[in-house]
Amino acid sequence: MSLNATRVIGQYIVFESKFIRELNLAHCKIGYQGTRYIVNAMNRNTTMRYFNFSFNDMQSSNFEFSIKMGAIVTRHPNLMHADLTNVGLKREEVIFIGLALSSSKTMLSLHLTANELPYYDRVFLRSLIAARVGYRYKEDPTNVKIENNKEYDTVMHLAGGGNYNPQIQDYIYQYNSLDKEREGLDFEIQELLDDMDVEHQFE
Image 1 (cartoon, rainbow, N blue to C red):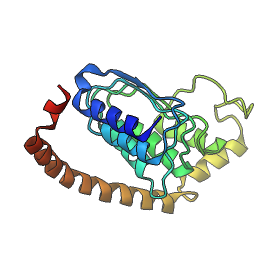
Image 2: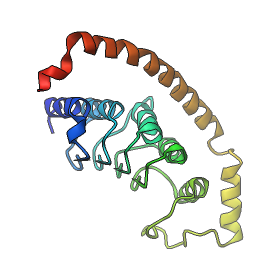
Image 3: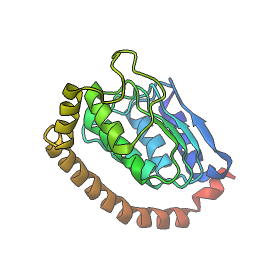
């Protein structure tokens, strides 16, 4: 999908949101800047119920898209299903978005398959958010339940925070900093949009 196409879709997500309930952009080969258009638009949308962005690119050096997706999952008033399968998220990014589920009042399912998250981390994440798993992972025949001492010890070690405590702390710090900046910019941006009367350009 071209960059201009993602920009136009982003504008529709924001300014024509009352007409959009489902958006499927899977396998559209959307890259960095296109992803930014879409994710920023979703961050301002309030009506979407189903969002599929699987098999596109959400990789960034500063966790930009995972931070914003975490905010979307946490705050969106209507979003029920999101598919982020194979979008290039790092281990800490998957954990961060997964943990945001506990703060959502509307989300029923969130697909994060084929991103960078080892098996025991998946077990730990599911135990934290009490997620239900619809099937057993094909790459690992182990039952998703914690059934033996070795697995129990591994999960308890992860629960202690030793594996990614510094990463998560840094991640939350970045999230809070960007979130404060976003809240400050939101008011300024809305004032500019009101002055420009942008919505009437899409009538």
